[in-house]
Image (cartoon, rainbow, N blue to C red; front, side):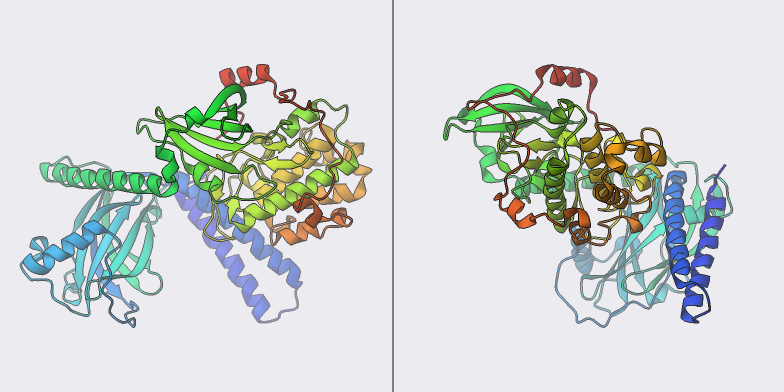
Length: 552
């Protein structure tokens, strides 16, 4: 059984391997450099996996007593500013302290000194304690703070320079390091001394002791009550401002009367999708109804926030949004021909080579656009690929889509459809935008063969299906998109690598993007509104059985 101790030992061993490999590269030792670099990648992957496992072992409950004992090497070269603190509560506290003094830290007034600091401690993203620090406390240490832990993993520190009233450093302290040498996070009454490396520069020294028992004193209850009230107030303000920032003014006007709501054409994780006809332009749209969720009775607006960023010919775009009778309505483009999965089910063996090439090129352009916006779809599958009347593909359903801060940011939560989860997600490793290329590979295999690529095992299923193996160039594309290691996957470094694959040698991406190319697959539809490719019975069944997405 893996414990924190064994994982820390394994991580330490992998770091030593990486250090030795880098030393070999620097010294130009007579080894195969490619093999050494590959070993570094493998060790990094193992470290990431073990860090993920440690997160599951380190959900800590109890009471942590913490005292700051030192603060060194901060970057104070920047000129003094007059900006506000990131925390309004902290700003008010300091403003009050500048006149009345910090009663908790003595009667000394807060003066403008170059080595006075405020240290704010966060647990689970919420403020838990605040410490005043200056050089005079180096010998005796700062005041002791008692922090209650509830399934906590780490402490976050913000260091504010009280002279300039600006954030000057941040750092993270992983609580699992308190139990190094212990198989389980039991009571650890011994005092532990730790160092926290700060960014962009500096070191914070702390002294801590952990107890599994929660002290229920009157003072602690008042302390928690105060912070709980502050958190609720901050949460309300953040939610209100966030909602109003993301929802346009039109959201507060009644627009439902402008539409005739018709049949159900889709079932989502947070609501249903209806066909609707606009009384203004007599055009048909898809309206997604999203109900309030959870005890908080708030809207799940993540999909709306994503949709408002998007504008692409191969993505189902948002027309408008509004709230009425406690329901959020998203008005979307209507793709009359239904989803690719429905069309696939009506073929004998799957789509032909020309059709697959056209669909693949269209989907590559859509995924490329999403990744340029630093968005990971995380649920690419034929059910989320709609067809228009002229045979073009549009990607839909951004309920699981994730916004990244940069192209190399990694995600830890495991969501999506089981059959389309990338190898690293199944291994519970951190993952990035490359998971969409894996899902695209699985979808293309599915569109070609009407089966899943790994139903009988990776090599077994891939090698026995003649509709794949006889089409060598397509087979090579799928091998690249579904590479087991993310670094070896086609598209990991750039979407241009996918577009340059020989499979797309004769493909005119610009013509498809401008919709000047003629689709090789034109769905048969009547001139009037036609719901031939929307199976009402399927929606009723799915509504009773739940979403096809699985969240771990």
